[in-house]
Image (cartoon, rainbow, N blue to C red):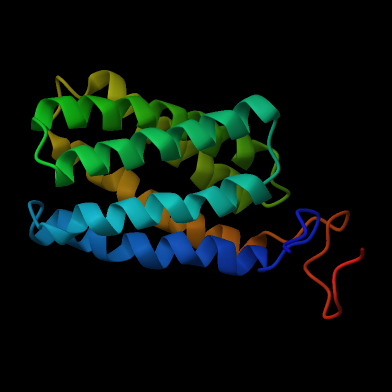
Length: 176
């Protein structure tokens, strides 16, 4: 049985997984925004963020926003895959991005690493801010947030460390 008190993967791996899953989608945003496989990969990308939300330090309300982001963006991806009207799925996605911005900013501000704090605040504000101005701006204005979130994931992998109070999984069996 899995022990909820143990970490089974390093924070570095937990930050690299969404980076690797989202990188092809970001490239597709620039080369072929209507690519069909992008939504499928996007669903898996967002599901991988569940691990990161659970691991990064943040207030409980900020973590709830992170989980809400994942929920709404997975829903938006499934709506797109099932050919639900684009405007409906897009509105759901933008609502999720507001929650993403809240979680990214809040979890970044408590980081001990200033590059993580700076990149996280810029990413979160851009992502959430676009949701409020998206009816006035082209979707292309959201692309920099996609690049910034990749930078943020990379910085988390480079600078963030596991909390010493909750070390990574030991080599031995879980305590009974």
